[in-house]
Image (cartoon, rainbow, N blue to C red; front, side, top):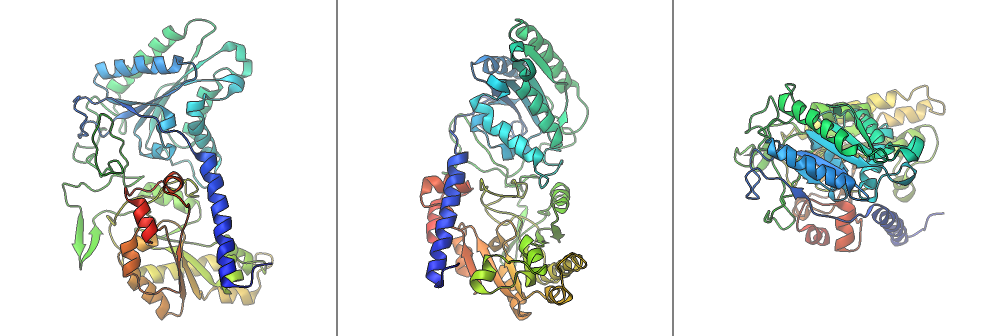
Length: 481
């Protein structure tokens, strides 16, 4: 039974949310180790030649894989092939979709398990490959090669980690540029096999002619240096000093706007970019998961609770708490982009991220019209489903509530006020969710039926670990909101 008072209900929600996010935080918290970066200029700068560097991962327990990866790193550098030598324990796996080329030198530990430093990466690949919502296009822009180190004494577990990495990368759409090669420490031939594999790898990298693979100058075939001059984020303090520069593309499936080109214009005082937020890769992935894409940056999808109440079953908590009928609720968003990369995100971070609006902007009236049209089409498809009555189906065709909470950060949309006004004009109530990173947007927001501010953690440290925000002043923004 739910508490009767509103304050008690809010307290219950806060307790449930806090316990859930604390568990997620503890289960996915990892150590951050520094990257070892190769800079062809030797000055720590991030220029056009280094922005397209490949990643060379070492998954190592006793140090063998790390040593071999270091040897390969030196050979690649001497051949003019720019790479970052990366301990996967310091790397966010969601960023793999941004990589052009990934090399892995991986050891297998006891019982076929990966060493500690590669466990999170291996688990993430396994979970993503098994998740039908992710699809096989996530790593379609990435080329890779794997070298495995193991012991024949492990029997069926011999080089299990390297084999699994190769399978999972291919399952997520990555292209293998060189067949998997395996070394056996018991035979003492690891060095020789690795040297042969390295020579073949360098020959492939220097001689490959298909697009998407890094060349000697660090720029992929088919793109100019200007095209690779994307938008990057510096460290949380807004500076990029030091030998290692950890960068983050503002668009997880495409290149951010050049800060030199002025790609984001101001129209009527609002940011309006020249490129579309939803690239063909994002569109294909989302549509495969049941999302209906509206224009270039919005989406709508039927919630499981909508389907449930259409069939005469229970609704979501908004029905229990506020009397909102789930089968008359339309779940949508005017912005698929977000300023966080939360560890609990069910989108597996295939949606774009950014600190500000930098994309082409669609008309709010068009978004509302198309959202209702696509929503009613999806409702009609429920006709004939066991439990769905004609009465509930008819009610569902006339949404009376819109949850602007599908995915992303709806308050980022520059015309959010006009969109909310249009929904209210049609007597559709609004429930807007924000991730507490845009206080100025909240200040400018006209009254919505209900504003839901996500409070995912209680301390600065835990909020950073759980939400992984892009803003350096994320905690101050969070507190203000």
